[in-house]
Amino acid sequence: MNLLYCTKCQQIVDKYFRNKDSDLFFCEKCKGGIHYFGQEEAILSSQDIFDLYDTEHPFNPVADFKGTQPYISFPSSVPDLDLLSCKDVLEFDPLNYEALYHLGNLYLSRQQLELSKDTFLLLSKHYPDSADVYKKLVQINVKTKDYDNVIDYLNALHKLQPNSFYILEYLALIYLKMEHYQQSLRYFIKAYKLAGKHSYQDNLKKNIRKLMSFIKKKN
Image (cartoon, rainbow, N blue to C red; front, side):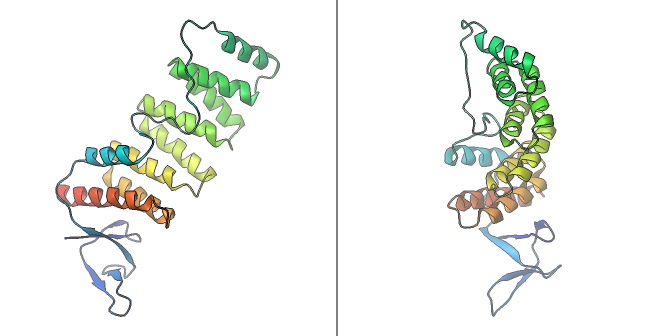
């Protein structure tokens, strides 16, 4: 069967018609244009989509999301000089961005996730336009598997970087992890449309085809 998706109805459609002049597909229900993603494939598990993503993308946002900032790791034998330096700065300037950001990273590198989260939440409150802060909050909440929070922070990040289709793809993957398959598909479609002629669009198309096939078999 054909894999067709109506962006207006926001669902996979089986009933459609084809315009002979334009050779385009249209939804029979709303008469809107639809996207064609090829033929239905074999039965697949959602894990296959994660595996495909891992082989073709430099990040694994579910198991190893690290945003774009360097991940700082300090040996346990190193004295708390960085910690003391940050606290010295914060004693005189409690909302110093660089000191708080470094402190949050330091806690994160030591797996003190609650302290790290509290630090980056404080930053997000006073520096709401910092995309790097939201990336760290995403990273922390992926580690703690608080996926509802991950979605909130990814949406906040998307408002700051509306042209990043990668953020929409991360949202799709998180919804997929939560087994919210229709929501996942919607965000994969949004990422695909936003990607335009970017070379990564082919990778998104593969994920969409696999997920559409999975949903149709599941239903």
